[in-house]
Length: 239
Length: 239
DNA sequence: GCCACTTATGGTCACAGTGACTTGAAAGCC
DNA sequence: GGCTTTCAAGTCACTGTGACCATAAGTGGC
Picture 1 (tube, helix red, strand yellow):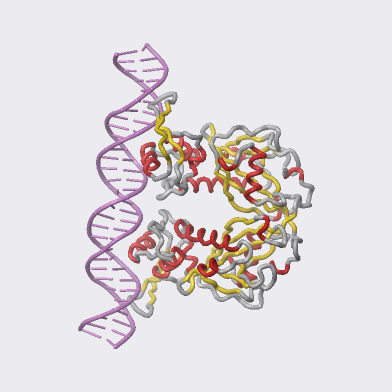
Picture 2 (picture 1 turned 90 degrees about the vertical axis):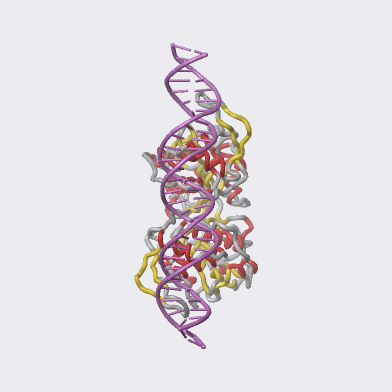
């Protein structure tokens, strides 16, 4: 099929967009950055931030640009990776749109800057977002993104992306607990994290919180993957 | 950005295609189905089968259709899943093309049917394919696909998709060995496979090969994921 | 200062899963 | 029968994990 395409003219034109699922852990909940739509379709509904891919721009570059425009954040400081593409014919009533979803993970991020497209952006708890009505097929994308994030916690060290450095082992543990919806044994978690080469690096400093013994501080290590993985073995708890 | 798009007219038109990475294990090698391009660009080079997404067709449906057109195979009998999207601006010299790559896994498949677009299709060992010159960015796609397949063997039961039923434990082991490029201990592999609930189901039958004790025959089980996973722990062997 | 409370950190123990290896079973071939 | 080949089952040491206990080191109340 591909051989018979006339040069430079799309065989069947579609729009290409990127949508961002930006996750953070804030106030004990996994939250996603959503905007309130100001126009039809889906006026007033929550939607994932995103936008059109520009002519001379790659998909990753478009995701980075949108991230900067919508949140004022530098994508190189976050964990940003492609999730997958969504292109069901009726997903956008205005025409045929194929969107490439990206998953961005970051520490308790500032509320998005005003004066941008995302003036009405909010950090919405993922549970609420999935109960609310989301524009287009963004509920499906969000579900896939959360599942991807849960899985990535098992096999990679991305959990550190949710912590502002320096962080304590308990900070890191709470990331796992919030995203997995479980509780983890503090002692066993510490053993796993500190004994896994390259997961975290001690800074030598300590931090005294409101209560309890001061906790040692850590930075993210160089390892990208977790071997052996940290599997969410038991059944999930109450939700 | 998305709100300002004029209805039904793409903000910036691109072409949407699907490309298929169809893998099988044949004659002791991991092979990929490639076609010889009959037109420019990349005339004569190997390329992944694929084609344009049609107006009223979802991405998954397009992948299923292309699979049928190119190989005569029913995608429901294979393991078919989206890999990721590729949309670097210069990847196709004829214009802006975003392609969604799919990974298909199947047992020693018949040579593709003639009389289709894929008249010049061949099963090429993956090693050779990556050394040869592939059209567009298909080398990158193939590399990603093979890595994905290797990872899926660890955490899922897809290895059974490479075996025609009924199969022996040794058949299944050779799938792992070929795709991972390692050797596995037959005894430990058997223990793992047979003791993992839902991985394989005994048929009760036996098969006598050219030499050796007859092997028990199995079907694929109901389990989709492998828990605990079957990790490729040691370093890869010579390649 | 002493005490209750909280959180961090360290250790023990039993058990499951795995890698390396040995032994035995069941076929064909000479 | 003796040989080779492959399948199958068992042993053993080691690692990682979950459950649990004990201690350390802060805060705030009195």
